[in-house]
Length: 321
Ligand code: TXA
Ligand code: MG
Image (cartoon, rainbow, N blue to C red; front, side):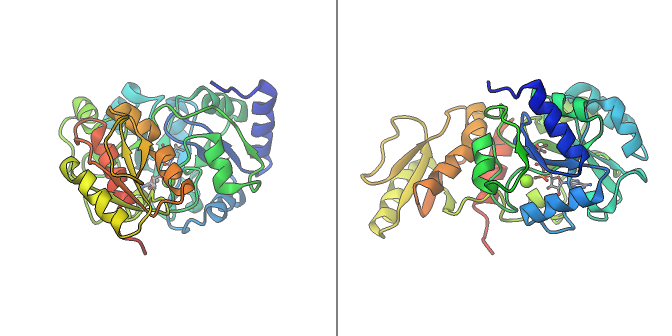
């Protein structure tokens, strides 16, 4: 794994202290970080991403003991989830304290908090000493970045520093659990599965499908330039052939040796949920790099991590504005 030197971590922390932006790896995806206590710095994140001001960003801290000053309340269920899954790919939505600026929450009275486990994220948080407000390091609505090269492809030289921590282990954004309401609810599925969350806090509230405030819940999101179609396995080959006959440049996400019609590009995608999650965004980026107009994928079975995979594919396949 690539690892930034201690001097690079120090320089990154100094950039954060002076109100600059640093892209850094986490175990889920790369984040675009700013000092969570610096309004101007957080605003720079929104303008770099082209993200609407009412979309809240997650506040990252080094360990659970540091969240006290960011929340008005830390309910027992949330505490149990934190004990079980932090550091790790879980974000908790909690009532915010007065420390949290409106620019971070988009005016909501809650705040999203996460303790990432990636050693580079941990080193940066500890060296910096404060909290880092960070959305995923991609332009708004586009595919998240799971390597430093992806971040460079998104922002070019616009960022003061990109810490390279290699490819992200999980590959999909954190599970978001809202603990600010009547009972816990999953707002965004991720590597901590619904089953794992329920094992800690009992049955969850059903999802409020109208809530689009969580930007990952907009209909189209995580989208490459190519159109994405989710196709049953038995129809994959015939749909690819049909599109190719229409003159479209077609790609298919699939395992090795998948038989496909001539002229259709096979983009290697893992054969189990973990490797599919790890490689999904890199695969979608490859589709665009090849100039394909349409990409087909078979829906993963929605158990465990499959729920998060299916969610991201459906968002990528959602109607475009
Ligand atoms: O894995 C991750 O969560 C990555 C890494 C960098 O930590 N971050 C990430 O951030 O995916 P972003 O901004 O791309 O997605 C965060 C999601 C957004 O959909 C946002 O709306 C939601 O979290 N969110 C943040 N604060 C919230 C709040 N107070 N209430 C509801 N949703 C919130
Ligand atoms: Mg994002």
